[in-house]
Amino acid sequence: MWARENTREAIFDAMERKETYATTGSRMTVRFFGGYDFSKEDANTRMPATVGYKKGVPMGGDLPSAGGGKTPSFLVAAMKDPLSGNLDRVQVVKGWMDKNGKLHEKVYDVAWSDDRKPGSDGKLPSVGNTVDVKNATWTNSIGAPDLTGVWRDPDFDPNERAFYYARVIEIPTPRWTAYEAKRFNIKMDEKVPMTTTERAYTSPIWYTPK
Image (cartoon, rainbow, N blue to C red; front, side):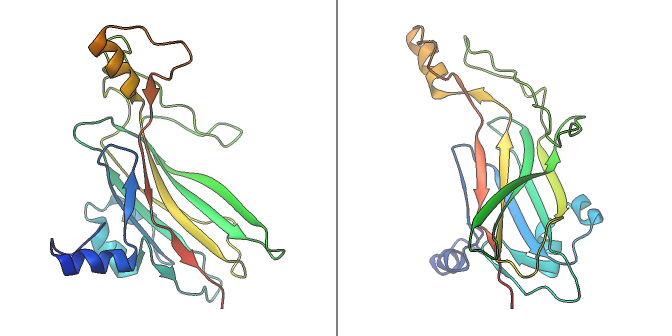
């Protein structure tokens, strides 16, 4: 959680604000803000929280109703765990409810590592895999130590309820099964996964129409 200081009061305030995120294991750092005035230049900042709080609301917050034909924009910044893998990509996951009350969800790639471009199908190519399963190790020769991006919702409907959260994905690293296989010098069954991609998920930012 993002607390202003390491005190019981500040930590409980952060929980009440829902300014929190979770990881699947590694300790990535993630900031996520939503508003209507973020620009591509904001992705160049080395202090995302400064511009994030100034122009929008943080993870767990509520976007004010859209006005004047504005479309929500989001600033997301992530840094790798120093002891884990580099970052593959940062995504925004959007969920929304249509006029019939049906829920939908879509994933958008916002920022990614290496010199990759989405294909004709709009999908981003794989970052690759450097895992040495036998020795339970990997190299950070692919991916990036940090990623920052600004994304504007191309499918925004001001009359639909919606939520947005950020998802950060690491490059592949050895799964615990690979470490155990090396430690005990055993061969795992072919069906046992030996690599994993650690992730981080932020609390959503909510949008409710007037």
